Length: 139
Image (cartoon, rainbow, N blue to C red; front, side, top):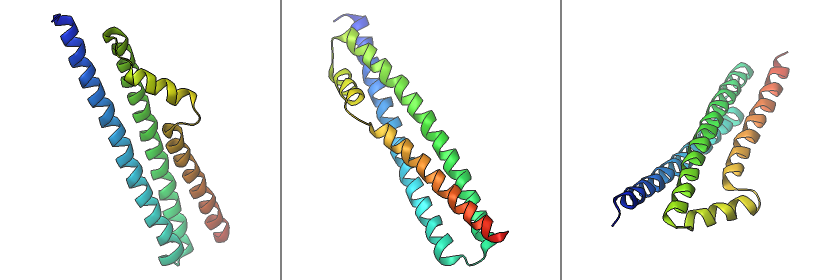
């Protein structure tokens, strides 16, 4: 077998593994994000009675949401770079599985990547509104 072809196949396998890592990482961060927001929302509306405490926790939640949203964007960019490498390798190896899946995902509606990013955005806006309400009550 051609040594260059073997190297390309190994590179392809490694790229697929790396893409899966980024995807798993994104989902783990997203699950933490959901748990984090659930705990903070329940504590703000159930356990914390002080308006200053509610406002501070809401500001903290906004900060964490924005940081996690940046992590999401960074991870998507890294995963897209890997995915583009996989597509290039597939063309060299005469494979088409990932290329076909990527083309399908790109042309059929909103992708999961965009939905997760949209959720980060909406949650950040929700916390911003909650914070403004608590600050307005303090004034």
